[in-house]
Image 1 (cartoon, rainbow, N blue to C red):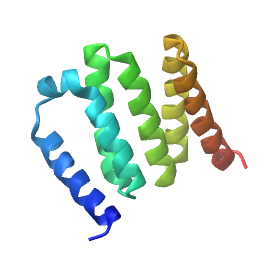
Image 2: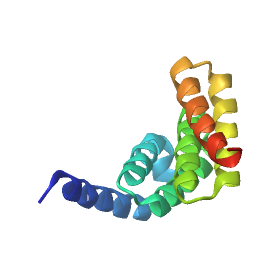
Image 3: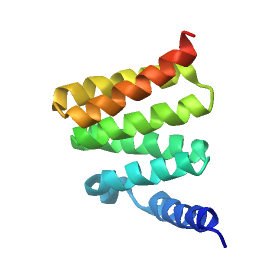
Image 4: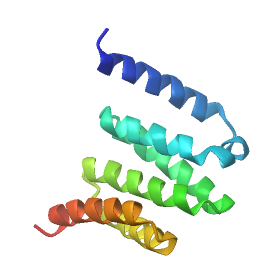
Length: 125
């Protein structure tokens, strides 16, 4: 079994666990959804990445987790970009930039702006 296939199996296992875990239990583990969603993006399962980023955004908003929120918005934006949902991708990226700016983290703001620029190149060629 190649490394990519093993990664897909691990991601599927993690997704199955996340899907049966309550929002209350995930509230303190929003970063787990960030990692899961990015893994799904890079394994070309952007529908799952979008679903997990949406759930994570809802949890992060309710529980006041702005750093996780910015990352989940960014992951959701990228997943939407790869699925051709450009307007939604731009909305999610815009919000990721806004949250990252409020947090004051240069790295998070930089990657949020970079992915927003990537989306803009598709929206406004």
